[in-house]
Image (cartoon, rainbow, N blue to C red; front, top):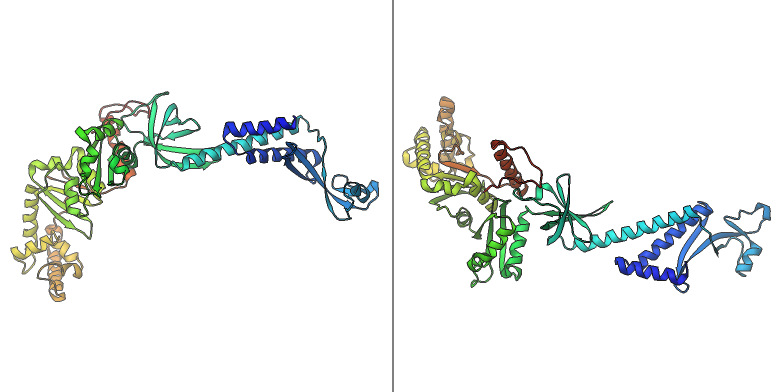
Length: 474
């Protein structure tokens, strides 16, 4: 290969593949060095350098200057002083003299080795370029073309590289086939031995938030902020928004004129229902908004356990709970509080039962029992097992002596009556109450998938792969 031709190849490869010239030169130097090392042996000291003037790779072999008889000379590592001074008049015994190897004459095997080294270097450089390009796009929405399904996971062609959309990150009601345009959220970028690996998701709450950022200029400009998001992919989502400008309604900005903005997001998410609620730093007000459209009658808050007991009118109970508990479950996930939804009728019944139960403690009248109940105690056993410091928060029992006396009297009743005076904590018995606890996003998605599988089992439908049609849940 002519020197000028090698230079042109370096320039062409660098331009076509976007690789720096220095990386290609380094690959060539390493390739020549490896081929020479095989030819001259592992003990030979060799160096390869690109000559900018001639445009070729120069190979140098370093030998030690010695005084020796010709038959005792190791030609691979040593050079006789007389010969050395022909190359360098100032050479002395013990010097390391670099001698340029002219016409190395590599064989077919050596050339193949050099070719593999060059290809590997170029491939590694390309992988690093792709990784550096996409690692900075982590957290963005990207679009590609579906190519194939591998082990249930969808492979998306992004042009320069492929991305993986795992089966668990596809909305249950979706199906894709090769050639379909796919839009998703870039959740992670890792560098593996096989090159950069990009992971996408369409089920993450972050994808929903990013879609609103694209659709709503006020969010992009920082005027409106999405504080929190809870989502059951393909079914329903709730987002809490706030505004930094009093003149801008955050909910109205996200909904858009005639609902055009939120409808664009719903369309991208295949009909997923979206509740947009105003965020509040007041937990009670925030929970009231999160449970909309149900009307809340009263809320009793336990800050220590982050629990709220929410009473609704009987006709509002099903609305507050939602289909299969979806509304209250999302509200609990959004607010981070455990929510106990109870109907007015059941609450009244439970209140009367608790007050009656607490009156079994000696000296506790109906009025006092109401105060103990309001402090969060439902039966005699709970009072007997409570800490003295907690009982001191009950009106009228703020002193150590009165709180201790109440605890001892309750313990005496429990010792005589046992569990006969215990009333269970509220739970979902299908007759006027429901409890929902905040769960991590992944757990929420797992619950959604489990509900889908249960519906399919009830319908007598076998489990399907990612690309198959699935029944859509609300």
